[in-house]
Structures are given as C-alpha cells and as structure tokens.
Length: 354
Image (cartoon, rainbow, N blue to C red; front, side, top):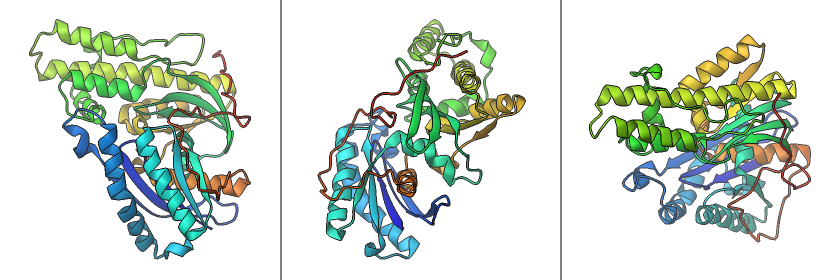
C-alpha cells in the first residue's frame, strides 16, 4: 500500500511517499520539502497569507517530484494523507484542499492527520527507531508538551507549556539580540562562543509539582538583561547571553523529561520537533538518560522540521492498526486548534510529577 503525505501547517511545504509492508515499520520511498524561510525573513516571522499562497505554488510540483523519485505513477497511490491541524488555517486548507481534490480524482480515500502525531512518530523513520511505550517530548516553535505514548493513537498528556513554547523562547530571544529570522538556530550557534554562567536567568516551573512548562518569564528576563547592557552590548556579551538563554531552556526541558520518565516508570524517551535538533539539548538528554539506564531516540535531522514524511508515516501506522478514519466524501475540514487527544476524543488528563 502506497501513502502520499502532504504537510502545509505553517511555513514548510512537505510531500512524501511511504509504503506499508505488512506489520513492519513503513518505508520512506521519497520526500520533498520547500522551506519559506527566505520568504518570511524580511518580515521577522511567518506571514499567514504569504504562507498559504506559497503552499499553493509548491504542493503540486513537489508531488510530481516525489512520484518521479519513487518511480511511481499517480494511480499507484492508495491513500492521500494530509495535515488536518493544528496550524495556520489558510495554510492547512491548501493541503487539505489539494489532498481531497487528488483523492476525488483518483477515487482513493483521504486521511486527515494530527500534526503533532506526525512529529512524535517521526523517529520511527530513523536508523534507531523506538519501541512502544515511551515518553515523548514534543518541542518546537509552537508546542512544548510531554506525552505518554502507549501506541499509535494512545496518547496521555503529562504536561505542556502554560504560555510560550520553547522554540518561541529561542526565536524571540534571538530577535531581541538582533539575530535574523529564524533566530533559534542562530542563537544556538552564537551560544557556542559564550559562557552560560555569565548571566543568571530563571528556570520557570523547574521545581513545580507538575510537568508543565513556562517560558514567558525567561523572555522577559533576557529583555531585562539586554536593557542593562545598553544600546551596544558587544558580540561577546550577546554570546554569553545566548549561552545562558539556551542553557536555561535546556535545563527545564531535560529536568521535566527525566521527571516524566520517573513518573511513568518508562525507560524510553522520544524527542521530536524542531528544537529536538539542538545539540546542547541532545547532549544533556543523552547523558541524563544514560545515567538512569534509559534510551533516548530522535528523528533524523532532516525530519526534525515540519515535513511530509511524518504525515505519511502516521497515516501508514494508523492503517496498519485499523484505526484510520478514511474518508471518501472529500469534505475537507481543518482544525487550527486541535489538542492531541486520547482515543475518546476528550483532552487527556495530566499526570502529576513525583
């Protein structure tokens, strides 16, 4: 069975093909990705209308590219999967509209996939795939959550950010330091030449009684330190502040992740989302997990960002388990706000940290 996956939730247009082969992990046949970073850089952030228009321009050529790379004809597709949400409404509608139109033309079913489900399952396409059950740290520019994952479709919310996501804290701090968009990776690079102990920054909710996160106060603290440094703080001061900011974020993410493993009794951690590519985060998670005999798994670096492969994979794994809500009415709808809910459809309960 061949599944085409379409991702258009924000500022990347992703298309991929995976093949379902019995009960084995689905195989990635081909993928293509277009990033809109250059388009949005002049505005310092994503402009939703521009994002939607660019998805319209890119999704069909990318689909042709992956079919050509896989050596498949259009009628070889058995299921068309797309990101149903969460994300930017207009951007989601582009992917949903294209998927449903293609499905109707081919007389093949379509399947709407949760964006975060795609992220948390993406490490199954890595050279070191995890096994169920595990704790998932979903950490990106728009989301920061800890989930207990029992299997595909079995998700229990352990904790989430009560304000800003970790990736947003990276990007906003970078913007305050005068770094270009997107600033998170640039801040991490600048931090390599700085001293994390040069500034004392808060670690919000580090020792709270639950597994929730908060990063809004950290952004305020960075802004306060920059004001103290004057109009021209100098490159070394910026590097030190970048290192301190990165360390504060990493400390919280690592502490909460280990607490989640302890509270669930699991010994396997999966890290997914764009911030999961951060080298400092990986270094400290690897060390802490190794110290307690736990395994940690990551997506390949090219699958940390939004991509079509994770959407096709999530659809394929749902098909394998017989829990795919296939549709042939082609009435595409999207959910810009959509919690990754428990199987009942209700928001999953929180679990208190030990």
